[in-house]
Length: 114
Length: 111
Image (cartoon, rainbow over the protein chains, first blue to last red):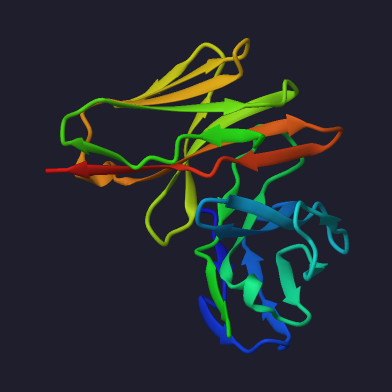
């Protein structure tokens, strides 16, 4: 079974704090993604990566950065958290660049910024 | 206009009912289609892919109409355990690939 693990499930941070969300996948997948999910808006892509040290902006990259130093690990960084970044964050991976690949999600990280 | 649109529901149905969800997509370069299921406060998981000829998996039937840019999911003999949000998902050829998720349709199945 594919396993995507998000180490922080529930976080409460103060405005202006730096936040790190870590994600690890154990199936040697090339692609990794960070989404946020908000009621009524669905999943929105923040950043994705096709390879180590490679990253591409998704639909809503502002206020976020990412790091992929190893194939299995993809980190999301909020340099200065704001209240409008309160959300559920989902990390995901898929095997390779292609249209028919299943996307596997982690269990999610619930971030509250106060 | 959203790239993938779904009726948000909620759909409230009794056990044993048949329920259908619809989804429309706007990009004619869309190449692959899926339905994902998401339980409350859980991650989305693949329910089934959608093929041009239509496909069935037990009580679930998915249909694709490329001409109308329309996807459907039919659930027969609904179970309480079918209560979830169903996400329509489309992969688009943009020179690379881009996967777009609909906002989901909420289903409640009641005893």
